[in-house]
Image 1 (tube, rainbow, N blue to C red):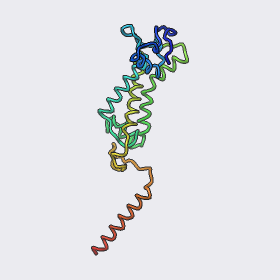
Image 2 (image 1 turned 90 degrees about the vertical axis):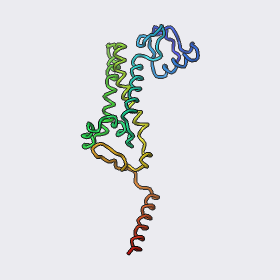
Image 3 (image 1 turned 180 degrees about the horizontal axis):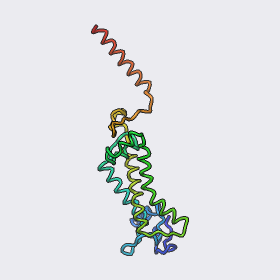
Image 4 (image 1 turned 60 degrees about the vertical axis):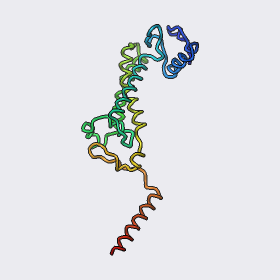
Length: 203
């Protein structure tokens, strides 16, 4: 951290800046190489992150907005992610139980442009451009944004831990994978005994 940008064509080390600027550039340094030739310069100031990261952060913001507008808590992460898509479009994936493929395969496809652009650049003489980095970073950010939104949204508590209350496309239902606890079994047995006693009394 605090690397000297003069080594990459820049003119500063963020550790030499004022506290506010140092915080901004220090945050960028945590997740970005901050290479001068891969960053935009605005008003003679190099941005704290490269153009690809700008695309990624913009995509995360858009992914969050999409989930906020269309996303639902559907108990599981995969079903919560899928909820941003129209129900009628995803019904075939529920009929064939390919929801995992749709949710995480879709996110993988959104990551692919960045993986290809950055990967090919790393192992060959190909050199991307800042515009390409921005464009390929954006879908990755959307995927990351949707993933994090799905992770934070998925919560069984609003359904009182009853998977049968979750409404899914194609009238699909979640199957609880957790066995009933001893307390729950005792509660059911007590209720059954009470109902039986009440029935005998009526006779």
